[in-house]
Image 1 (spheres, one colour):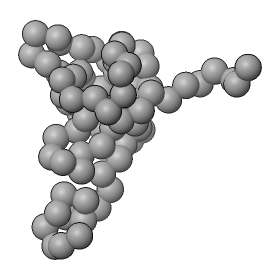
Image 2 (tube, helix red, strand yellow; image 1 turned 180 degrees about the vertical axis):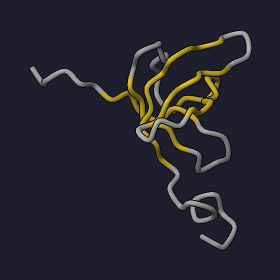
Image 3 (cartoon, helix red, strand yellow; image 1 turned 30 degrees about the horizontal axis):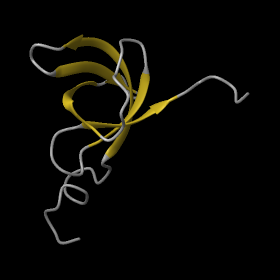
Image 4 (spheres, helix red, strand yellow; image 1 turned 90 degrees about the vertical axis):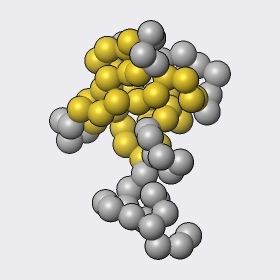
Length: 80
C-alpha cells in the first residue's frame, strides 16, 4: 500500500467490531456502537455476505474502501 491509503492513513485499523443499535432502511444506514463505545454509521447497501443485518447483532465492519461496510456476522452461539 502507498501512503494515504485508508488502510494506513489515520489510526491505521480498518476493521471494527460493532453492535447494531438502529437501522434506517430508507436512508441506507445502520447506527452502531463499537467496542470502545463510539457511535458509527455503516452503509446497509454494501455487504460482503448474503446476510441482512438486524438490530442487536454483532458484526465486523471494514473501511478499506472508504465508508464502513459489513464484512461478517459474529455469532456468539457455541458450535453444534
